[in-house]
Length: 217
Image (cartoon, rainbow, N blue to C red; front, side):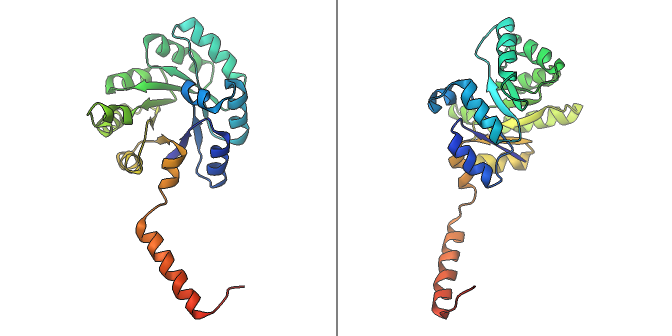
């Protein structure tokens, strides 16, 4: 499974990238706002740091506007992945952008039918929002499983990018189901390493080692 980090905070991305935990980055208008920088500046910084795809989202809602903005975003760096909403205009833009040889992430997916349309439009990635489904008492993992089955049925190359992952359990479940990618905030990705028995075991080992009075090196 690929790990994308869901943030526009350059410092946090660098920390995770240095650990080898970043296969790509997803941003959105809300994250750009939080970063305090311009979309061009922040996206360029991220693209220079990360080898994988960096999703940069259009804000236009009509096809022509999306295409104009996609052209501007694509000029920032070669690894920019254009992010479009799952609307009819967004699907039309997806098809056109893909024909230009650029990566497209179709976002705000909440149903298997929507995911099917995105695959038919040639999307590079489909982003089902599992956390937001959980918020309305719908199991987001059921959607990941449905999309996985549909894509496998027809050998669609579109990668499932489990988005709005808020817990380490979301990541584990997405991996078990077979999501190609998960995107999560830095804190959630770093929390994957944590386990109380690991902490307790390390504490005990260090205490016992101190009693030996030895040093290594």
